Structures are given as structure tokens and as C-alpha cells.
Amino acid sequence: MSPRSVNKQSSRARLITCILAAGKAGPVVAALKDECGVTRATMHKARGIGRSTLRTLAQPSEKEILNVVAEPGEADALFAWLYDRAQVGTPHGGIMYMQKLESALPFMLPDLPEEEG
Amino acid sequence: MTQREITVLTDASLITCIVQRGKADAIVKVAMDAGAQGATTYYGRGSGVRTRLGILGVAVEVEKEVISIVVANDQRDHIFEKMYLAGELDTPGMGFMYVTRLEKAATYIPPDILARLEK
Image (tube, rainbow over all chains, first blue to last red; front, top):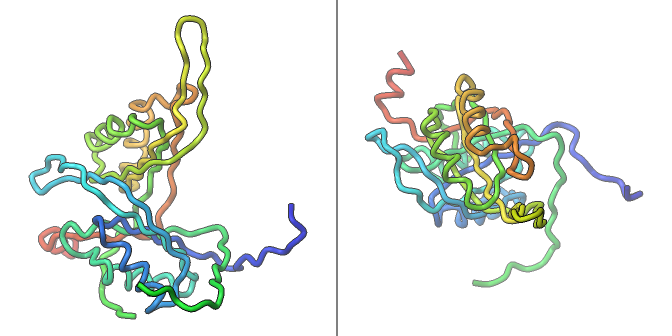
């Protein structure tokens, strides 16, 4: 164990996961930082399959999974913001869910100018 | 931040299943047949074994597939069991799976189903 102290948050943070169509997560990650000041967001690629309206299996399609760690007091508002911003409430908009975390660390970025482009 | 009414699902769980690469599609099909409404699969990297045992070689792929499925709590155990059996997870090296409780989930709910829920 390291002798350095770990600055864990006392109340339980939340993990919000959004499963979105390909190409949707990148702009949301950027908006999270620019509009909400949230930096604890990551995304990765996946493939998804769901049921079509005819009750048959749809073809697998490319998806993006977005993970966001939210402060306990802000989690519900961030969940609603993501629901709107990622258009989860539209047909084929994906699904999102929220889980309690045991603990979470803050993620602070160094004070450097933004990269261009 | 905007605030508007969202219909959230509260009795839902997330099944996560980690298996060797190439095994996920068969498990997803079984889960869908058992009542799951959708599944997401992505790649990962885990532990592997490559040993020669007599004539037959035993190999466990290091590359993994991770399956995530959101299910209603009342279907959770049924789908979990079907996936376990389909993935032969009682065999060493085949993989493992777990369930986590979701606080809430949201997705598109067609208006006719929403009207039925609100009655």
C-alpha cells in the first residue's frame, strides 16, 4: 500500500452508462466537459443487437458505450441532461442506466490550454 | 441543465458476462430467446492458458468478449441461468458472469406502451 492518502469522496458517486449509436458519444463527451465541467467520462466501441418492432432479432449494429462518473448530488440532473443531449428518448436512441459506486476519485486536468482542431 | 419528465425503469439489473472471443453471439442468442430485449458486446483482454495435455491441446483465449444485458428483475435469474448454461461457465476457463443492480434506466418507450403503463 502506498503511504500517500487517497482522497475518496465520502458519499456514493454514481456511474451513468449510455449505449448509443456509433458516432453519438464523442460530441456528448466534449459537451460534458464544455457545458457541465464533467471530465470523468470515457467511451468505447461495441456491437449491439435488439428486437425490431416485428419481434424478430435485428441485425447487430455498431454502438458506442459512454461511461460517466457523477457526483451524488448532481447524478439525477446529469442523467436527465444526458438523456436529452444523447437523444436516448428517441426511437433507436439506445439505452442508459445509473449505478451506485462504492467510491470514486476526482479527476483533475492540468491547467493547460485547449488543443486546437 | 434542462429538466423534463423522463420515464425511468427502476426494477432492472445488468448482467455482465465475460467469455472467450467468439463465444458471445451464441450466449446472446440464448439470452434473447429467454426474454432479453437487447445486448451489447465488446472486446477485452483477460487471462489465458495454452497448455498441451496429451493428444488434445487445452487453450483458453486471452482475448475476451464482454456481454452486457439490461434485464427486468423478475427475468434476471431465468436469463442468468440460461446464459450460464449456454456459455458452459461451469467449465474452468470458459468465463464468468455477474449481476449488478441498477438504480434506474431509461430508453425510448413507444407512446402506446407508455399510455398502457400510465393507466
